[in-house]
Image (cartoon, rainbow, N blue to C red; front, side, top):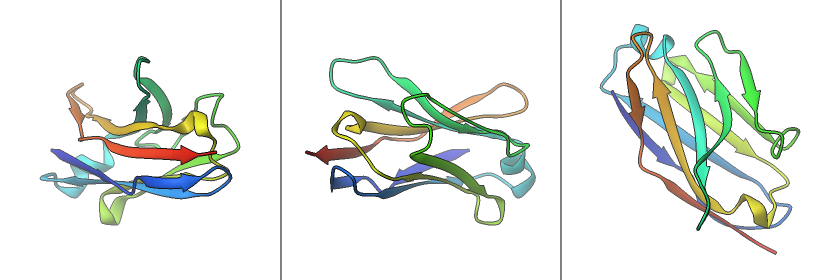
Length: 118
């Protein structure tokens, strides 16, 4: 299983971005069984969980992004999205996608930089 994150960039406060995490080297049934989440790490800070979508499609969000970010998954495309609306300078970070399989194996993608200007 490989994860490829993309969609980061520079955006003004109040704007929007959509991050994508494409899962490759996995058959569809494997992807469907993955719990996938987005984490972020700002300079000088620890990595934190931002949003998660389970294989059941149940979602959860960090309090700091509730009402602004939406995580979703497209099983046919083996892709998970993070729609980021009304972004704030505090959202500036490197964003990572992570997957956990039913057997408990963890997979990380490379990060994508999100920079929000005020």
